[in-house]
Length: 160
Ligand SMILES: [Cu+2]
Image (cartoon, rainbow, N blue to C red; front, side, top):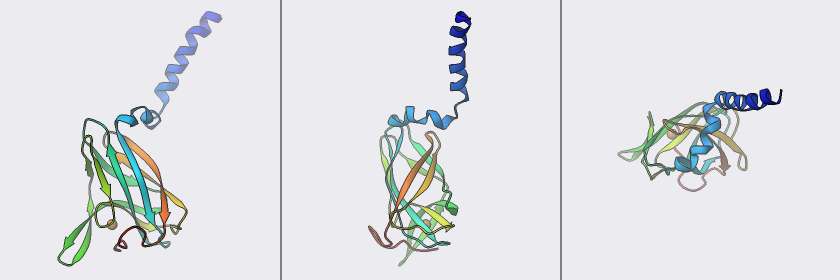
């Protein structure tokens, strides 16, 4: 019985490790990979839209790519960039956002941002909203995005 248990225990550990989803192992590689810094968004009404701003840092030696974003609150979440079209600033959807090796990409008002469209509840200052960013190599990273007052840190975000 003792011998059996000695053999069985490592086997069970191996089985447990194999059954763990990929995301459960993500922290092991995170120091070399992608980090999300200083996420924030602004107050918005129910049914409205909100821009999410943050910095993506890639400590790895290979480029990575933000390929999708999701959140339980909005109906749709998109990657956007902002383009100047004459005197008008226009937002355009992006399929992905490249993050260079050893570099970072800033998502900020007037530039790249994540767009929460069709909010099922208002974004209230002091609260936060979970947003999951999925990268080609680093996989899914969920951050808690604090809500700041409307008009915080920069020009108001243009609506759709
Ligand atoms: Cu937008």
